Length: 265
Image (cartoon, rainbow, N blue to C red):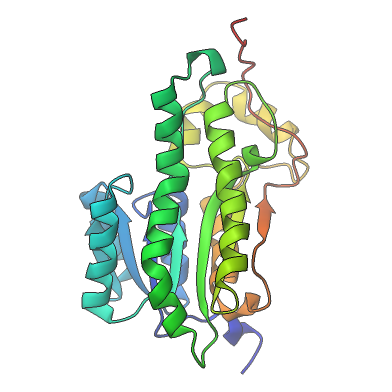
């Protein structure tokens, strides 16, 4: 076996949430390119179908609203029905729009945690027995959670999102401890990456230049930058890595969010 073979996922089965666009789409394509059968989960079925066409016969579309526990259970059941195993889970789906703390209701905070933390926990819990079984005599099951640099940075307007992603980071560490050595659990703290959501901001004149100026590697991230990190953490190349939150953020030491948000106080 060569070093590059350690990144291969031939014959393995991976579930990717948020797979219809952005980081989820790029991750699904990367895992498929490494040889995995990929189960594509998101709410928008026509976009999932486009990703499936790009992958080919090793893709399976499963329309899923990750905020609904019944949908997550159905996703696991569909994967097992089609493939009989689960080797990799990548929890990509998540997000919460910037809102100042005074405008965040209890329901808003609950929704942020449900979308970013509860959904990932529910699906991880449902997959865990199957991931653990696959690890017997093999390289082991892997969970990769897509977190955010805002989990450990500060800026106005991100209390719901940042707190939820901080919880996701520590949930990653706790599950890694509890499920070792059968399942490895890691996360990626993503910096400013050129997804559809960020394009809504960067299309404004001068905004992207200002964000790039705050980033040591002098560019914003591309979805493939995150997908490559996810492939590493999903594969046996990272067989001695668990409970880690890997920063993939261009080296930015602080928030690069371009708009000051008054607190309202």
